[in-house]
Length: 208
Image (cartoon, rainbow, N blue to C red; front, top):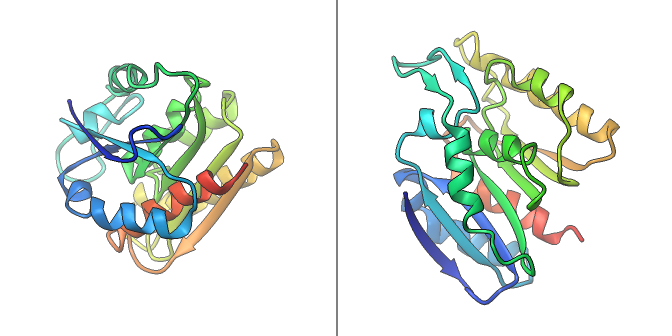
């Protein structure tokens, strides 16, 4: 696990983001957009994920694209991330894109360390995830959700459920009193991940 730190390390606002090489390639753009959309300084910690499908999946599930199954290694990843949250005088937010967004949502069910979740285009099509949300208690009061308006228009029968799933999750959180936003972006899953993630982090930073 490789850690990289950006922004003001002395800030009491800490953003934690699981990333891959694609995320790191556009991290400067993401940071600039967060700064543009929010006022307070922040410390961003990126956590490089070794195996995307293993480290970020909350439980085992068969592959939905390609041949790589989901191995359910999220708990190990979460323990490594929690080791970065030792200063309880600071406010920690967790977030990410795609499966990292799903992981971030799941993480808020395991611990109350995170004051908000920034889930940009999260993979809420993941088998059993909507049911999990309804059977368990989230330990944060702020959740940002987003999706591209073409993401559900796919021939993949599992991934095409993402639109209905995120609408259902948003409605559930709203009914439960969670301060939740659902924003629709233009394009498919691969359009502007840096901007979408930045908007997610900025939203939860801006909510008192």
